[in-house]
Length: 184
Image (cartoon, rainbow, N blue to C red; front, side):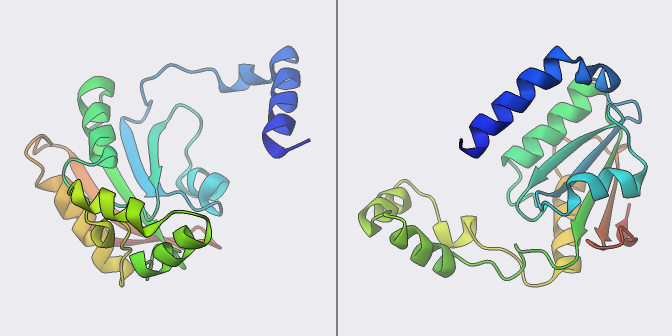
């Protein structure tokens, strides 16, 4: 049985035994908070625990590196929805130590894509559509600088109200200790 089938089997038991009841909440974050962070598996439980967040307290948006890479990417869209639809008035950008997105590069992905059957012709077509794969798959070289850049992109976004608090942090991916990088 593959992993997804194992998960589906577990889910049937979870629902039958009403395991969901302790997680019931509505869609509005109790703390009026959104957290933009990395998708790193070390943060799955550590991040909310280290921040004292329970189910329903915050909107947690995750992507590779905890980045806003352009003013109109999906992370920024999610933050805009959180502000206007869900009542968020504070945003934490939380990067982490030893992040895999640090030093990530298109050159590495290019080799991996080729090895898994993605042809260079396909990559050329994507480039001809206006996608700069070097930029899109580029990571960052310095975590504090990356946090500052993401915070600045959010703070200066034309659709983010000036009264929204935006602060940036790096969390230690082992201990959960927060280091504040920038404060509005």
